[in-house]
Length: 351
Ligand code: SAH
Image 1 (cartoon, rainbow, N blue to C red):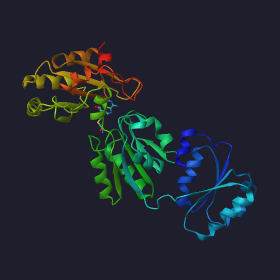
Image 2 (tube, helix red, strand yellow; image 1 turned 30 degrees about the vertical axis):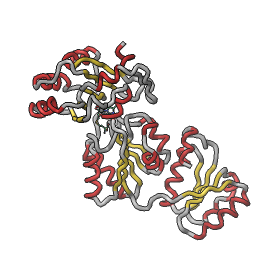
Image 3 (cartoon, rainbow, N blue to C red; image 1 turned 90 degrees about the horizontal axis):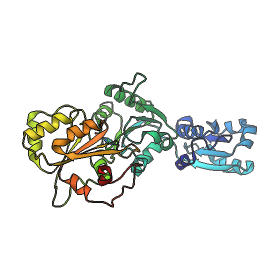
Image 4 (tube, rainbow, N blue to C red; image 1 turned 135 degrees about the vertical axis):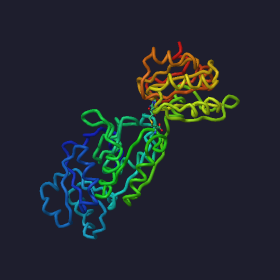
């Protein structure tokens, strides 16, 4: 039944749906049919069915949630008598738990099947700016959606607060999904969230996601490794300026350097890499807002990239790629990306 979301969020408007089963077990079905626009009535115990009288006759659908009460075995007969469809559904989880879901780089089709399943079963979803935020309502039709990416004052909800909220709602018995951009364990603070759950004895599982560190270069045709060109890639955070030591090591590594959260420190990073001997002619790229209609890439030699990025007013979120693999993408004239409105090859971007 989760797939009904594909037909739009209010496709059951004007229909009466009767959900039968104990409140805890039935809560997800109730939330889902309500969010589909149906007029939802409930029968918590079998004896309440009779009280529904005319509503029962009007109902388009009777939903039986298996709550273990043998009294519900009357449902098929009731439905037949009223000429109403009967569906049965699994009960919602009795004990709360948290699932960290990697949402991928922002395109709904790049979310895993397991991630979609977790969202479909969620009571509460905490999400933020990166990842497939716009489609959460469709993917989690029965869930309360909480945007922790910004508060009314446009500040992010502090990480400790997010963790406390997740734990609290799991302890209240809810199936909680924490949807994160990319992979939860790549600069996603997923580790802190797992630790917070374990400390509170809340069961927690994680579902990986496609990380922007690989997928965003890929969507413009930059392979992070390429036979004969690069046999390693290093993923680094440019959130805080690199130390001189780090820059020396990064400059000496060879292979491909991928930097996330690095637009603000780009000029410093490039100056440091150059100071430590990286070839000024090394091809480099800034790929902004991958997998969105506003995707854009700026490509230049390493010694020209800071200026090119400043002129183009490059902004976060962006993935920076430094290495000979950037030139490999340039030669693939006919590569077209499957996802993202504006996905195109590097050469087109260059032209
Ligand atoms: N866990 C995420 C990364 C979180 S850090 C992952 O695995 O992808 C956030 C940074 O990721 C952004 O500042 C940006 O550098 C990068 N990023 C994430 N999604 C992106 C996208 N769609 N386009 C460009 N950069 C992206």
